[in-house]
Every structure is written in C-alpha cells, then in structure tokens.
Length: 312
Ligand code: R1P
Ligand code: URA
Image 1 (tube, protein in one colour):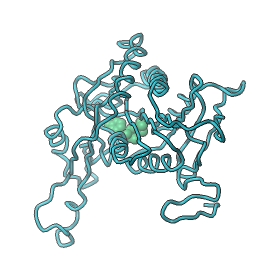
Image 2: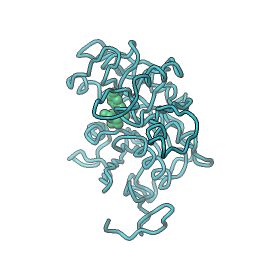
Image 3: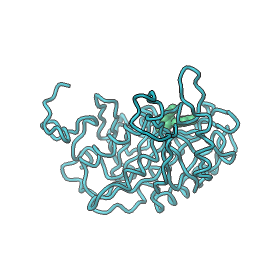
Image 4: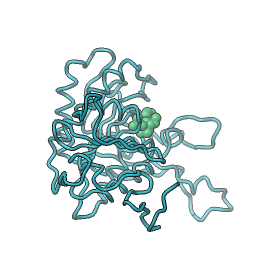
C-alpha cells in the first residue's frame, strides 16, 4: 500500500478511490457486466466502442487486490466490465465499493461459469436463474466438541432461502441470448438457454459443492441431496451470483441495485462431463455481447451524467 488512506470505516485515498477496487467516482458506469476471470473481461471488452485506432476502451484499471475495471461505451451508452475473481467475499467488495463511487440505480449482470445439477443443462448450456440461494459450510459443526458454542446438535451445511433476480433484466437477457445463440446451438458443443431455475452459491468450490476431497474432513455426502430437497428446481452451482442477488435486495433507497445473472455450464455434475475449450471460445463472445445488449436496454433511473467522468 503506497497511498495514505482515511476513514477506517470505509477506507479511501486522498482522491476518493476505494481501497480494494482502486476506483473513484466517474470511473465506473451505472450499467455493469461482471465476470470472475480477467481474460473473459478483456475478451468481452473487444465489443466496446473504441476510442482510438488501437481499439482501446476509455478507462482500464488493475487494482492491487485483483479487480480489473474496464469502462467505455457500448453503442454509445456508458458501460463497465469488471473482473472480480472468485467467491462471495469478492462479490461483496465489488458491490459495496462500486456502490460507494456511483449514484443512481445500478444495473449489474454477472456472466460466470458454473456446475450443473440438472439433466436439462449439460455442459455448453447457458443458465439464467430466476433467483439464487447460498450453501455454507457450518463451521460450528467442525469445531471440536469441547470448543463448541452450540449446546444442541448442529448440521454440517446451512442452506438459505431464495434471493430473487431482477425479473425484467432476466427476461431481456433470455431473449437476447436465445436470439444470439440460435445460429450456434447444437454446434461445437453449444447448448440452449435454460431459464427460470435456481442458482446455488457454494462458499467453496469443493466442500459445499459436494465434491469429494479425501484430504479434508467435509461430511458433505448429503449436501447436494439436501439442497435439492430444499430447492428442487436448482440448476446451477457456482460462487457469486446468489450473493449478488442478496446484496441487491439489501441495497437501500435512494440508490437501488437491479441484478441478474447468466452462466455457461462448465461442469456437468449429473453426467460428470466438462466443457471443451473450443465450445467456450464460441460461447463466451456470444454471451458477452448478449449481456451488453441487455444492459443498454435496461431502464436505469437517475443515471449519472457524463460530466467529469472517463466517458465524457
Ligand atoms: C470456480 O472455478 C469459479 O468459476 C465460477 C465460480 O463461480 C467460481 O468463481 O465463476 P467464474 O467463471 O466467473 O469465475
Ligand atoms: N464454477 C463452480 O463454482 N463450480 C463448478 O462446478 C463450475 C464452475
């Protein structure tokens, strides 16, 4: 850390940059596509309007904590593409610190990869969930008995109720995806669009997603069955989208957050298949473009004016 920061409650540098994302007001737009992987963000950024002959977007920032922010315009409308890495806590940093440097409604769509728990969503399918829930390892269960706070029996995994995705954004997204994917569906391993099921966020790629790892004590033999019993229409399993929906539901007036998500199925947990890199190479740009098309069609109240921003 080189900069002096102020405010221990919500740290910023002297120019108003938030601590982990390294960005300030005017550097991130109201319409945001978020991904985990930096390479995915850079590939999708090729769809942005270019400012010069080298094809560069107007603003790029790599933060010291692994967040990549790319801001520009898509068909003339300001958008940001942000790569945030993996897991619920990175989603928390992204949503809170982005909210802190913006005003007006935020429209956020996550485009990730996922595992599938449904025979209707094999590898190469794109899932658009109607909502999501979280599966967390219950650490209290794994505390030695003499050190436990709980007196009664405890379960190894905690499963939450459902946080809703934004209906309007999800509907537009499904339409955009169906149209864009029609020419490639059934070719090179690309599947169709599976909408209206639920997403589950695991707190781990391993334990809470029911993967067997003999090197660790996980007691996760029943976690997938337990999740399916609680939420029979679960389709996808990943690590950020339900957290995004949760944070959007917790956002306070006057600055709401509208959130939706889509993910390409990488790991088919039903038939134990995995997507081929050639399929990803075809699917990813198509889905990325559909997300951008969706973002520019969404109604965003009190959108920030261009004055003093990087997209001015
Ligand atoms: C695990 O491999 C990662 O892939 C998924 C999961 O949510 C987790 O972050 O998403 P991304 O492909 O967006 O990273
Ligand atoms: N991402 C996950 O979190 N899980 C999977 O199985 C695949 C991608």
